[in-house]
Image (tube, rainbow, N blue to C red):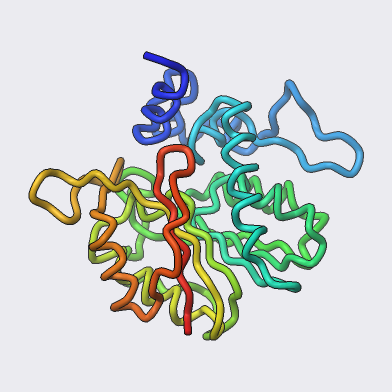
Length: 253
């Protein structure tokens, strides 16, 4: 198996043999920085391998490459003084690249509490414009003790507050009812003329429009576009494939 194929397999299955983030929930390493590359003056620390693996993939080079790709992509479509919502923010893989833009006001939300706790500390010097919120949403994989059903999770933001919502590998883990619910919430918090950038897997089982489990969900792209239109966030552009996931740009008219 080639490197890229192996990378995509690990990104979709999250089965690192080194960083067992599912079972080692009491390990204090969950909130530690990467010891091999400590933060330098006026720089952000790096999350350790366990946190990186829970966000997507533990390998540091891949973590950087994927985060940078999303940082470039999102930045291309941001307005002058953007309010950005990052749903499924993990341990700041995208946030660390948006942090470079002093005009960004950022909210990251995730159901994986250790990642949020780490980000709150790591980005504390920019707490006036970067906030990280833990949502106690239920997920058999990522937050099995969560108290809020995914179809009932209201985003903790007022109406029409956000210019850009980013869902980098969020809908790849949402069942259909939850996906519809999140699209409606994204519409609610988005300003008129605001956008969302969302990635999905596009290889559902034969004869199905939507298939899989929380480890990996696949949606037929035409059906995803129908869901977006029904939520009043129609697809403006199918951007292309970013590290194995097809990316769409939505807009609230």
